[in-house]
Image (cartoon, rainbow, N blue to C red; front, top):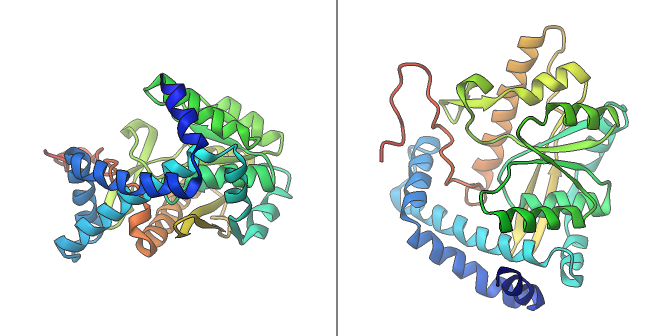
Length: 291
């Protein structure tokens, strides 16, 4: 039944699919009270001076953007999807290719911003296949489907849990590894680093591996520039001094979060605000999401 529905949606022209899924995303946002509440709370933390009406408009646009994102992912691997991929613009490509030419592998550091799945797919298909580190979806069908789409572009999938050995092996093969580093993590897996002025527990495994292997970390983000238009920006490597490990890790996390702040502030409706980013608190602090 699910595969039949997916095949039906894949058969629809992309303009029609996006016409349906964009407002459908908005409808989901109006019905999804719990996640809308989380998003509004997060916006209040990040932009405390923003008027309530503008916060609600950002959340509404975010859900509509997610609807478009789903439509685009559905079409990946089709002729229309190939045209969509061919029209993705790359900016600063020399930053990641220059880092890759050093021969130590590269971390492409990004977050749940823009159409991050399309970004990885387009890079893998048009520039160089990469590995993407993913968290398994709870829904088995959704997990199989999205991983199938990821692989159609030539990319490999690394499951996030206990992935360190596989990541290090890929880096030693000189591969580029895409990682999403904008979500909360357990206290024993990260460090508390300022994010929009409030401490956020941030995964530190990637900077630690980077220090061990010498692999550069290059920030990259996909910006939606129109209904079906995208620009992928590759920034200069984070590149903190490597003299001492803990200093390197700390500076990497700080620079990474500053980059997230910069990008999110530029296009706040394109970040996934529904995640409880500040859920894990320093010892003694109360829960922020007390609802």
